[in-house]
Length: 304
Image (tube, rainbow, N blue to C red; front, side):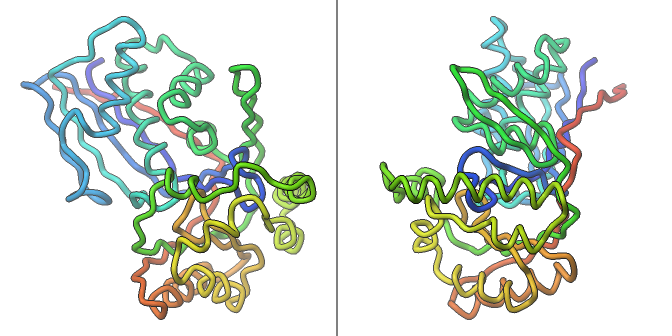
């Protein structure tokens, strides 16, 4: 075996109140092929990030690949061809960094003869990424609950609701670190209880495909009120989604994207949200997506 391909889906985290513990896979994929051989590292990036991502060992995907080899006491291969075709927008709150990390680790694991199982891959990716929500949804697919307990990640996966997801990705550059820096270090008991109850409702709404319940459930007091101020046009985009008939709207992950769940016409809803950003002076792209129960997957390739 000297060539593998890894497919990893986009993800949306938090889903309103489920801060750092809920995430969902979306049917938008990065596809990366790793082939041993050649001379040195050769890397071709197409699609999202084509002119922005480094084509060298400083690329996040390659760093994760190399780190997995080293964590198993092996030197990473120096002669390597990587062809990465990306559909997940960078820095969008749709899990592009989680997809890169998981792609590198899963490829390394397969090329090494699969020394790690899914749980060990998840632990390795979490150690590299720093938070497990997007990683878990990308690996397992569906709607995931993930909790760190005494150094172990406890995960549960349920079928995502049969909703459409409308997403507007604005051209706003805010890092995850910056999006976390605006959050308060302490919250009131009242706000904590509010989010606990609403997180439970999100799960029930998804299990039962209850869009009306999801509309009530996705309210949040821990992160969205603070982060919305970082994203000009976001409140107008949320209002546009509601006017288009979407029942449940939230920041996707740490932002800046806004995601809305609807039972119909996700294309128009996404377009209306993007137009709202544009009216506020921020260019934005619309995406009409669906939740997916499929997680990351790999295949070996015939070479030569």
